[in-house]
Image 1: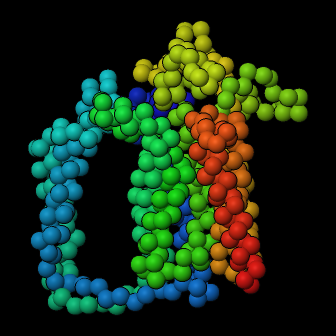
Image 2: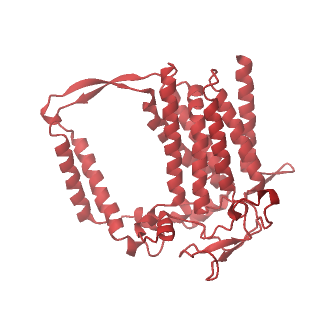
Image 3: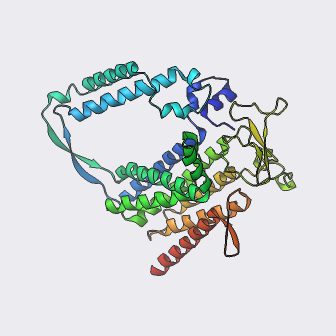
Length: 400
């Protein structure tokens, strides 16, 4: 496992760049998930614009004239932060990141004011050079035609902000002891850990609905456009779970693979998640034990992480990546076949709910006891998602 990008380069290439400890592999793949989802959404919105489902817009933008004070101040502020914080972190990363959580330095008031002022001056000079021609021209308004995909940035921003808030809130609902731990010890590590994907989908979806309503976008057409990218982004995000070993794994799986799966690499059947980002150590109720990596074990031991699971567990994040990729290609092939808005999104909900419900059967998750039934939060929400998708599909096809 590679908790950060630093460990990837160190183990695979032998390159020692401590500054890369700032980039968590899980966070990197979450960012890539948003990028891939945005790319598919942009392509779909461009396609639907040609069908007159979404429309472009003509807006007037000011050109020429002097640069405003706000622009000068923004340019200077960006340059100052880059020099004061980021260049300082990079230059001192070997000493700063030798111990402790690298992000604690990122979110502190540590830095170099001299470097900040120097970079602020550079950014101001760049702004002055870039606008030397436009400043000499009179201020006027120019009409610019913007495509429907101009909304992609706003949609992704709404989904990202709502998604992170929802994922964190639902995680705390599922594991309330972590909320108590944060207030008892309000450290950055206790704040950053733990996200629940369904919370992100629900709250992020509500945020996108609010954006669509505010900007006059037909929500069901937008939901159809978003659906394939959502599934692909989910799969990309799960790669981050697998690579970092963030605890999104399955139940213990000490048995050998059945004969018909003997051609698979061993890690696809049962994996011990060495150097997992959680540093799991000691016995767990799920049935596995976190042990220290020793000199005779087949993996390197990364300081601060060097543990593995015994026995190995189902690598459920990998399974979800495979399933999400297959579902994405199915949705991508179906997207042009349906004329009724919302049908593709309904099918997405059914696929999403079914996939997550069945993977929960071999995943480690908190069990909820209610009314004589035992289930996980994800099983409950995935069931509701599947049924909602089925009801929406029935309603739309009956209405047609």
